[in-house]
Length: 312
Ligand code: SF4
Image (cartoon, rainbow, N blue to C red; front, side, top):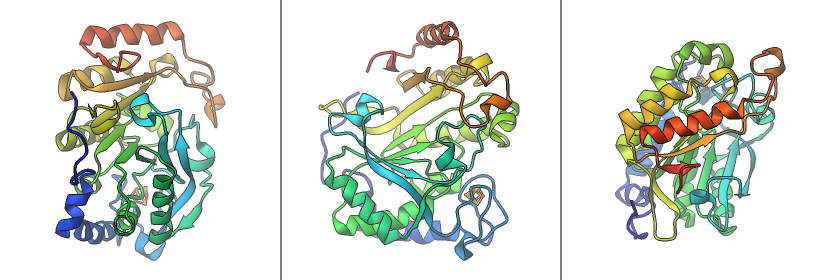
C-alpha cells in the first residue's frame, strides 16, 4: 500500500502547472460561476461572477473562516506537525445538526481574494503542516484553483486534501483531476429521503456515490509514504447517527463492494446534538454506542481493515 517517496512531480498539480494545464483549469473553473452556477450539483440560477449568492450563500470570493495546524485529524493526515486546515464559510448542505454551524450556516468568515488565499496557503506551509486540508470546499472550487495557481508561483508545494461532504459536481471534480492528491469524502447518508429531511439536499445518495466513484477513479485507495503519511487516494469518513439515520450498513457495503475492500475508513462515533438538532427528537440525543460497535463489527465482517478503529 506504500507509495513512492515524493518526487519533483509530487504533489500532482506541479505537473499540470508546468504544462500550462493548471492555468486552463482556472479559466474553466471560473466559467462554472455563472450565468447559472454549476460549481455544485444544486445548479442555483445565480451568477456568482457578479457576486450573486445561491444556496451556499457565497458569491464571487471565498469566505475564509480560519486556518492553521490541526491535530484532531486522522494520524495519516496530522502526522507530527499537524494537518493545515483551511475552513471555508458557507456550505451547500444545511444539516440541522451541523457541529460547525457558525461557519457553515451563519457564514462567519471574511471575503478573501485569490492572492489573499494564496498567502494563507503559504503561511500554512511555513507553519510546517504536512498537507493543506480544504474544509468544506465544494462551493469554492474555482476560488481554490485561482489561489493555487498564485500560490504555486510563490513556492507552494503541500499536497491538497479535499475534505468534502461528497455533494460535489462532476464539473468541479473533473477540474480537480491531477490537482487533488487526497480526497476525504464524508459519506453522510445512504437514504436520500433522510438527507433531504435533515440536510435539505436532493438525491444525496446518487450524487455522493457517483462522486466517490470519480474520486476513486482519479486517485484509488489511500496510499501512504514510508513516514506513514497519506500521499494519494481516498480517506473516507462516515459518522454513525442516532436511530441509524446515516444508514451505515448500506454505506459500508458501498465502500467495500463498489470502491475497494482496501479503502481507508474512519467510522466515527462523535455525534453530538448541535445547532437545530433539538427540534428533532431523534437527533436531539447522543447515539447508542452499542449500535456503533455493531457497525464496527459489520465493517470488519465486510473486510474493512484500514482506518479507524480498524488499524492504519
Ligand atoms: S455552489 Fe452555491 S450557488 Fe453554486 S450551485 Fe452550489 S449552492 Fe448554488
